[in-house]
Picture (spheres, rainbow, N blue to C red):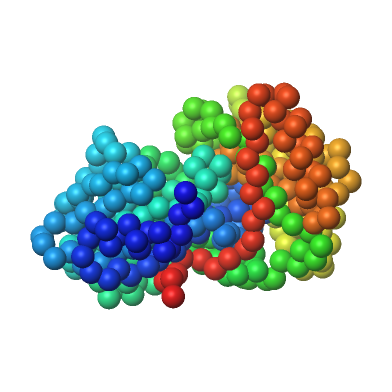
Length: 386
């Protein structure tokens, strides 16, 4: 069943009285700049046309209710003292947001809410950020608080850290909240300064190839990579006290002190330092409308993620290697936290159908899995549905 703002509203009216406010909150892609956000680096995300929709209205009694359309489950949160729960797990993303409103001293009325959407789970499109951001925006609008989006996205990130247990950077929530149709963003994750510029794809398309796998390592290894980066900073800070994060580290610093960066720490730091440089170069490529140079950097990023940062997997590596055999593909890489999810591919529009058909067949033969495909458009960030 296709989940749309209309279907969410219809479900709301079957369950609850009142005329709901409708909110949409998108997933995101990241063109380049993976795992750099929590290292104070640069990222280049965009909001897309895969979204989570909310219908929300004041409750007539002193009880709040949230209904998850995907699971057919309802949950009654304690809006005075929201705490983590063992079940249902989806509720924790929303309870973390509620916790931020309570701790921030915001006055909230009881509410009824239905949500659902079409952001694929486990595909690296940040369905969790879309859920958190959309709910935070909905609570703000419902209660007439009009909290700035820049503050809401940090409240959503806090929920991810403390109630979902993933120490993500700010990129996912930023892109979901702040996206603009037809534009990508270059975000400085240290200063939070950003700029929009049009993505002139011309005769190219953005195609996501979904491995349909999510290896169990993803959450624990994400946190481990963050710790390894922090360890690299600790070592280098002994020689360069001004260093605050890997954003401040150069290739020469890494080379000079390579023997002190033991285990996998050197490789992790090398990837991040090089990726930060790559993103800055990629932004210049886009400003110069040089998609060929941009695509080459996407391939470089995947190599680093696979061999140095080690967050890829056989399925992702296979799809990128297959993409290299197509002249129509300018660039391909894994996207997201890793260990599954999607590759993002920049492809000539005329060759999209052939590319999808050939890769689907090859992937099925190699892994016995039907590859998912998402041809995505760049859309606005979290907003009210007119």
